[in-house]
Image 1 (cartoon, one colour):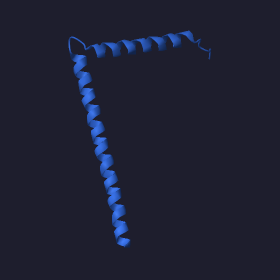
Image 2 (tube, rainbow, N blue to C red; image 1 turned 180 degrees about the vertical axis):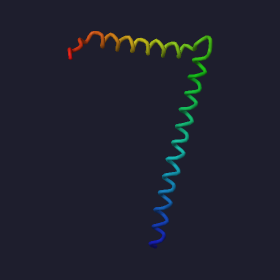
Image 3 (spheres, rainbow, N blue to C red; image 1 turned 90 degrees about the vertical axis):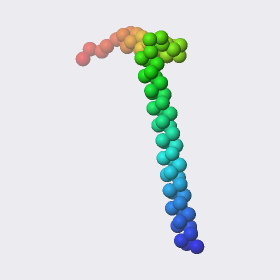
Length: 77
C-alpha cells in the first residue's frame, strides 16, 4: 500500500509537469503565429485596417507621453 501511494504521487507529478509543458508549447505556438502575422502585415503595401488603427493608437500614446514629459519642469542639479 505504501508503494502504491508513492507511485501515485510520482505519476501525479509527471502528469502535472507534462500538462504544464504542453500548455506552454501551445501558448508559444500561438504567440509565434501572431508575431509572424504581424510581420507579414507590416510588409504588405496596403496595410490592414486593424494595423492602421493600432498604429494610430501607438502614435497617440507616444505623443501624449512626450507632451507629459515636456510639461514637467526639470530640476536644476
